[in-house]
Length: 331
Image (cartoon, rainbow, N blue to C red; front, top):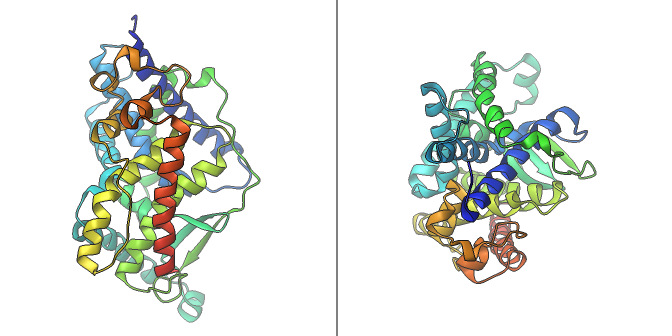
């Protein structure tokens, strides 16, 4: 099929996400200083790629791999997990703490004798250069199936991953080398017993909500930004999708908790967000707007009248400022 300029740009953005998925597989097999927990934090974005690519191919009437009913339900749920901050503070807190208490109850029941005496862990955390970039409660929250105590969970996730791999291959991910990544960063994981023995000074439910917000932000602006050597579109995309929903979520959090966190909403743009989340460039860009050599094909210029680097610097500045505000309260 022959694409017009806008459709070709959409294809190339999907292809870049397919290459990122291919890189995650390469990391699992070859990276020397990283654990697979970072893939758990990436699940919402894998869902965006897989569901978005499948839907885009349907609309374009391409002969690409298509979902069966089980895969459709799984990936619809997975992609929606990137929108959890679209919920109210009360709704998000309830979801997050339900997963937290599932973890607490599970690990309490299976304590060894040693753990009964010296204490046990209920939350695992990921750190990149000393910054918290993920936790196991978020990983469980993102996953469309129960994980704890589910001996078949790994098989289900593996089976569901087949269609993602087939779509990535369809978009030619294996025609490229994986994105370059650095094994020189100080990447590690550490387990804690929240709230009894954890790195937070705010040892309550609000503290854990804020901690999870911090993990989501840092996954993008610390881990993805620093671990991947090249200037890849996922550095902007992952950060922006967190930012977009946090703009309103932080306002609601402040109302519910009498706090005064601030996130500059200057870059909040629904049309721009839709392009990143759905690959539907045609409703926002005209052919004359396309910038072939730009990481985001001219999207930041169209939405904000800013080049990619300037827009990214502004976006990261907003998120870094919020992260620092949160750390002052909880760390």
